[in-house]
Length: 344
Image 1 (tube, rainbow, N blue to C red):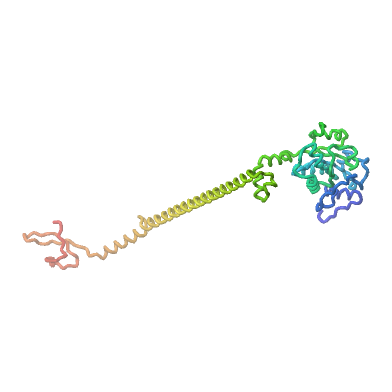
Image 2: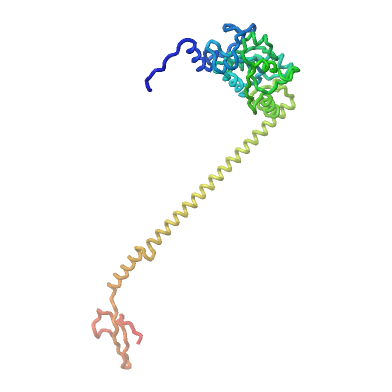
């Protein structure tokens, strides 16, 4: 019902409800980055011996006792695949505190290879992810019971694919056997190796890009001849762009001229049709001009003198038939210039 207040909850239930609304986040605000874990371990909550079970974690724990989930990785060139994995780990249980371990440069270079970002850059990238509550620097490559106990880890989150490294077929095997492993889904189509592959594949493009932006050939580890080659190629590409732009403009101009000419022809045809229709309407068989002409012809005929046939005597005593205007008097035909000789 509108206007009705919900009953308030008190005590642990209120804390748990508030924690669930925040998604179990240990941080009080998203305006701050996640904190770093202390080397000697976390403090301020219950001992690790009171670890929650999977069933308890899924039901939900009290607000003051979040389920501490640990996820580790290299997180080089931090991308959406990393963020999605951490989001899944954060949402495994109703009340989760996500602890993320980031391996150092020394361990990563030893077991996996060189990185693009330094360890400090990778630490900062992870601690600014919204799902992370705590970051463990210089995380171990293989998780020991002592490390899990020191940081009070309840569960470890990772994708279910066996991770072969450091002489082991699966570095998470002992975690799975202890019942502390929870799986997440791997994001296909995006990984640090994929990003590096794109850069290596289009190496020349990115070298030219950075030369344009002011980086020197020494900073890019490019020789003198290659630098001149890239500069020349850049000039050639600019010339191609100008030619292409001119071609597009000329095509646009021709297209506009064609449209204008077609429009003019269309308008001329329309105007011609209108003129022809007007002419036919005025001078056609049923037009007003024919009626006017007929009226004028009738009027002229009424006012034109009519001619009548007369008999005109000839020298031999015969007569010729002619026509005389009606206004002439009888007997006045001889020598009259209006006399018209008939056919007889």
